[in-house]
Length: 95
Image 1 (tube, helix red, strand yellow):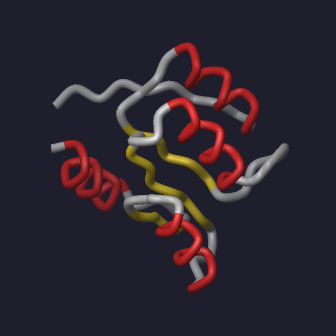
Image 2 (cartoon, one colour; image 1 turned 90 degrees about the vertical axis):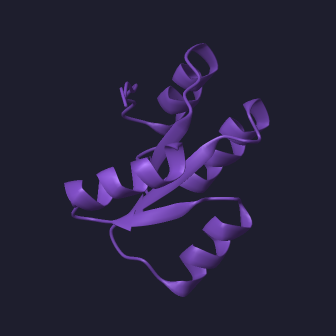
């Protein structure tokens, strides 16, 4: 499996990049410097309602998980990121 991606350092940049270069899966941090990851996801889903999304968080909780699942988020990963977990989730959701 070949994986290519785009990187953004802010929510606005992520939305702008997604408009120009849509990808199959989005990894999205819940906390960004200019808006929440949920706000970014809302904008990306307006472009592609079927986009596969995994949220990244420093601290998971029931409210976060409920909101994420309600928005169609497939899963979430807590920080610090574990590369084995990341690869496992990529394989699970991209196949």
